[in-house]
Length: 348
Image (cartoon, rainbow, N blue to C red; front, side, top):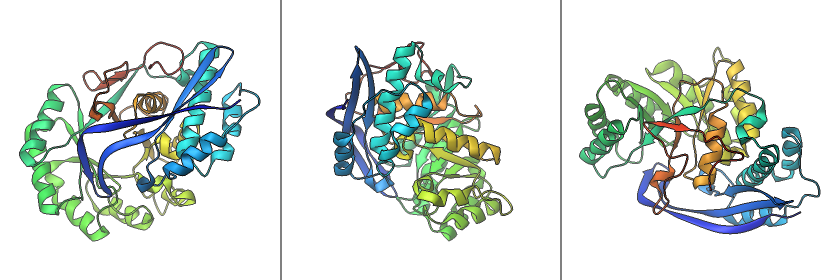
């Protein structure tokens, strides 16, 4: 039994500038696994600059994948995708297709397959962009008016003074009650990150994602002790066995929270396992996308609904940044996504 593979491409409504480059288009493949009239779907949208395999390797892995017997449990699915370990985006797509196929056969939502409590709603943050400080402030004001309780801003792609002006504009626009989250994508040195996060203390930042490079575990640990906001690991989570060092207590873990991108970590199953291990050691988690399409966002939302803890906002208001993609059941309303009560992913 082989996958049906179709190319897919999404252009962003406006480019997003990050410390690792400007993002303006996302391309990849939708996959489907069909048997006995039941279809399970997944989506592979690799981002090599973030640490996944290249598009060519992802497609080759999808084309080569074949399975004789459909899995009948989470354990079976985990075993079936092990050969795709070196291609996490492809592994995510195949795992998603198998999960939905199994969920539809059982008549349940994918999240229910894991045997955990499933939250009916998940809190999400708004990723905002603007050409200048005023434009960013206006975008933040719109997000707050739409009901978002957390806004997120990409930093470290511009001079620090410019970022400070942009963030000040956001805080003034949304007031003190909306949480402000930043993502440096590893673009700062440790010294710059320390100076920046201390200097921005009056803005009451909720968390800074990946302030330093992905392999600088001890830099993350030192920053966690030295700055007033919480520190999150994002790109670090893709560094093979290195992320294990994030959880080492010396005397505490290197970060407060882990950012889980299931499409970059190889699926919902390894992402949940990692989150449970981290929670046992006092490190929390939230889920985000890699600017994926509707299927990828739906899958990440199902993960968010079963992650331990519920107070973190998840980075799932991203499909709205893609040009020409209509609203669906996972479009946030008042800063939250409500899981549809349908079998499978619940998205077309």
